[in-house]
Length: 245
Image 1 (tube, rainbow, N blue to C red):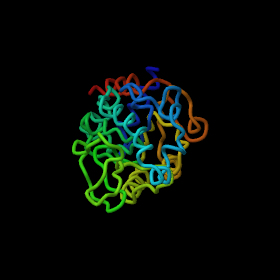
Image 2: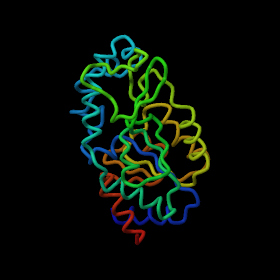
Image 3: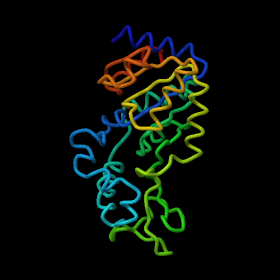
Image 4: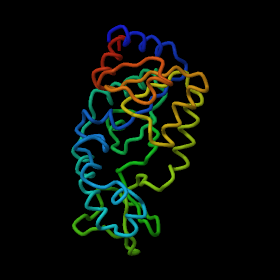
């Protein structure tokens, strides 16, 4: 692994515009299982029954029972060494920013400042009727679903199945990957569109793809230039050390 880590470190140090793309795998070491893994959320709840926006609108109280489980995971998790390593790379101006598919806000809590949240976040919620926003800590979850003063059901500010990616997040992510010369892909299988398109776009613009993932993904044989088959925390901590940071 040392040779691969050094190659990745050298490539990042010589880059002009490096960006990270992160998925569920980076937060596994923080105690948040990948939704699709054994023990993950979708092993307990049918994703189309609980994760689709139309399911929420048909029965928001039922979907909120799943959301409470998810909220507990997000509230109890803490950043791990992988999150701190990416924050350090940004502070050292080696990394321009992070595009994340996660809704856990762990990148920000670790110190990252330039974060595009492709699928939204759980820090706040909004009324599905009138659109009024509420901080997470102001929600009354004793009765489900929580209700807006207008009477509408309140939903988290992340993207359900069947919803579009927020336009601002999608446009910013596209700007970054179209410009980057190194894309650091961490903990994502890159199979869920449209986030799965980002490495393809970056590669098409000539970017060097570094993939960190314990298991090979669909990217590995087709787009990845340098594959490091290690957990994110171990690999990114070693990467920061190899740069002398």
